[in-house]
Image (spheres, rainbow, N blue to C red):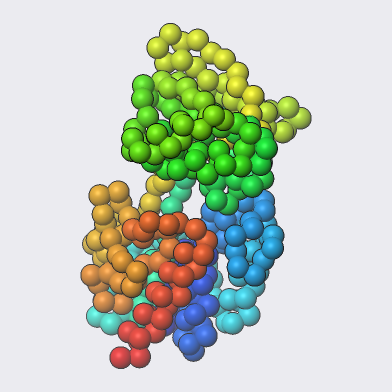
Amino acid sequence: MSVYDVIVVGGGPAGMTAALYALRNGKTVLIIEKEGFGGQITHSPRVENIPGFVSVSGNEFADKLFDQIIAQGAEFEIETVASVECDGDLRIVRTEEGTSHEGRTVILATGVKHRMLGLENEEDLVGEGISFCAVCDGDFYAGKTVCVAGGGNSALQEAILLAEKCEKVIMLQDLPKFTGEARLQDVLFAKDNVTSFTNVKITALRTEDETFKGVTIEDRADGTSQNIDCDGLFVAIGLIPENEGFKDLADLNAWGYFDSDEQCLTKTPGIFVAGDCRSKQIRQVTTAAADGAVAALAACRYLNQ
């Protein structure tokens, strides 16, 4: 069995950038991804906030990054990591498929999942009417009508950005009141193009010829339903980190994110974290890539000691 200098868990922008920087420093790298390389960025049909690209699809960006690390000599496996164990100077990565891989360092770039509504056709409409990021996708709905599902700080912040671009923003909150900060509510609801519904549940996504056309909502109090026409739906009901299996190696904060600062270090020597799985204020492709570089260089310093 080969012993790699660096094993990267996760094939999103953070993980692939970490692999790139480690490879450029002469290290051997294995990157393990459970689904498809690229992470959440692949859900965006057009991305316009990556330096150096006027416009690029998320899939194209992920493909370019993957080709780049393969050309540099990265090895990869499509497997689901179940655990990471420390055995002296070795880090043993075990997978649900029953395999194990040995490395001298491990970078956890496990990413996050967007919490979904759980509706029929929802997955198929991601990037085709359903979005999660106003910074990434808001420009595509300039002059149009959008709905925002959620009522916390994230939903309010998304809606404030969208209200600057869209003709109309409709807030859909499933609780009797909005739970985000009063300051954000004051800013948002002072805007003339923002309306809201509270205590409603989105029960269906409406399409016509496979094109997103709006949602159906149900009043939780009286059970009445109505259709709302809109060009896009921004879902902002939370993110789900998948870090629980690594909590013995890296501390988690109250929300389940790795409790690590910009240095991307953990309490376990030789274990580093990077990307959206880490506690941070801004989760964008650029900040994920930055984490990947920081974590890889930290791993290289550890290896060179």
